[in-house]
Length: 302
Ligand SMILES: NC(=O)c1ccc[n+]([C@@H]2O[C@H](COP(=O)([O-])OP(=O)(O)OC[C@H]3O[C@@H](n4cnc5c(N)ncnc54)[C@H](O)[C@@H]3O)[C@@H](O)[C@H]2O)c1
Image (tube, rainbow, N blue to C red; front, side, top):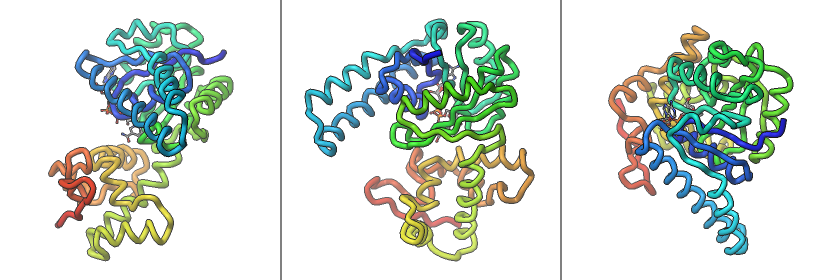
């Protein structure tokens, strides 16, 4: 089956990026949100990101401005925004990117399974809910998989394709082809909590928080250490602020529950920051204060 039409469910941070890359690849893309208000915000996010990409293509890649405008208009022409789930019924591939809540995702997949054509593939962008458990509410576990993109989706090159216990080889093959079509490199992982990237990344981020807790080095020096010592584009504490302290805390709770290992136990400082609303860039304060976004200043945390 050739994937020609994609439905993206949820147009928040991740869904808007996923919709953008599908449209840029020339795939008909229907985007569903829960209300007109969220739909408008999501559509504006996609349009602003496409306009930014067009500007970058003209200024950095020296693309002909007319060609760049045509490409943007073509991408916009591929997009349909809706609040009606029924509008997703003829999609070949559905990518769910709603909030990280198992019950809400399962309710949605029950509806999608009843609505979508029998050959359609259903995917979730979940960070660490079991793919097999989400697939179990449908009658097409062979056509169900995880498709885990990274933030910001238009920029990050990787997508993890997660194989549930019953996901078929044919489905994995289709998804690898889709990843290539939207300009991503795919890696395949088994259905384990955190897949590949978060299993490796989360303990590293937590070790950085423990260095702060133990007063081993300053926030700025820890970040500088990893950027200049290891060539990482962002230090671990900058990255935590970017991903979100709240998101990382929720991920740690799920991973600790799954593995019962200290590697995934949230350091007390992470929990305190979460409770205090220091969620990083999104709330203006985390390990850094973003009052002046161009010049973040390390916070005094105790
Ligand atoms: N934020 C990240 O860095 C990141 C990275 C990888 C994966 N994820 C995963 O992607 C998913 C989405 O995360 P996000 O950061 O984009 O969240 P978000 O809160 O920015 O967006 C979620 C959107 O889904 C909408 N929504 C909720 N229920 C819906 C429904 N039934 N139908 C349509 N829309 C619905 C909400 O209105 C909201 O706009 C989560 O499962 C998350 O774990 C997030």
